[in-house]
Image 1: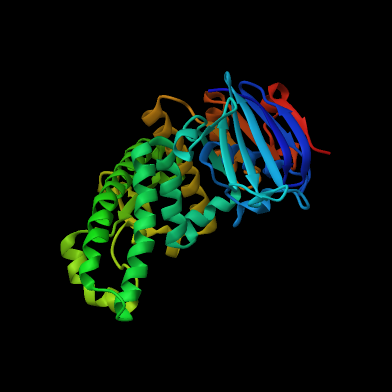
Image 2 (image 1 turned 45 degrees about the vertical axis):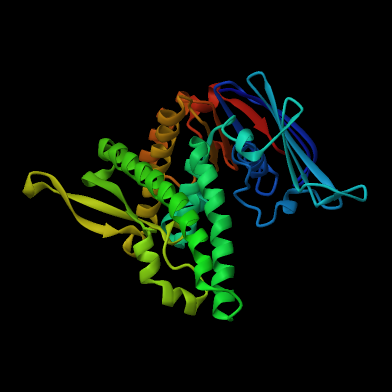
Length: 363
């Protein structure tokens, strides 16, 4: 997989911007607010169909413009996303259009053509933030690698909204509890697949992290636990009255969470890992950052294992956040796949890497 170039039209602050990338690695250098992260956002958008920054997709369209266009040349294919505000030249239009070589595609058929892993300083929120951030992370990884997961996730979310509306109508005396049966079965079918795939991902991560404990000082390692909310007929029946009272569905993968723990090695006990510490509640910023680093390495390997392709690695100004040990390890990872790096300070880049990397300057 080789991302050759990107062309942006009316995207964020760029009226027009074209960049050529090296097959191995490229470094985008520039001050804050120069648009470096916008480029990574555009690549990520083409990979996943989603932004990692915008709350509303129209935020990515340059002020005063009706549409934005993002296109990349990937190997021999031209991938394109057109964003609109819902209307172009007075005519209603879709807010997002997907095309491959000029042919319109559905979201599910468009994604998986470009695979990427993004690592940025804000990813520490994966550890310290809310459970919804961790669920979103699971979705983003699995939607890149498994079309069945994507389909089940979309169906589950639509069904969940319908079931919650029905619960509210039942509570208002406008519908019968018997009408829940259809939505219960739909959520159980798709929710069970979501739980299964999330469990597989967590198990893969832990297997990978077990191999990588040598990366961490004082023989520490990160472990991920899947705090899943099983959805079944029995659990839905158990919580039925509570759900009717609350007007929302109280069980299912939309209530899942991940637990990140740091295990320390007790040298006096045959070097067994124990003394688990919850990183969300009790981890320092440095330990949380280390955990995110480990998770991102696991993510790269998971995508490779599932698809047979190495994802494009996007590193957004991370070298100022990592200690020297982890900077050195990043340098061993970069040559394994195409990598696009942004930085405000070229002095943070290892001189050997800087000497041979393609440099793109935003000044």
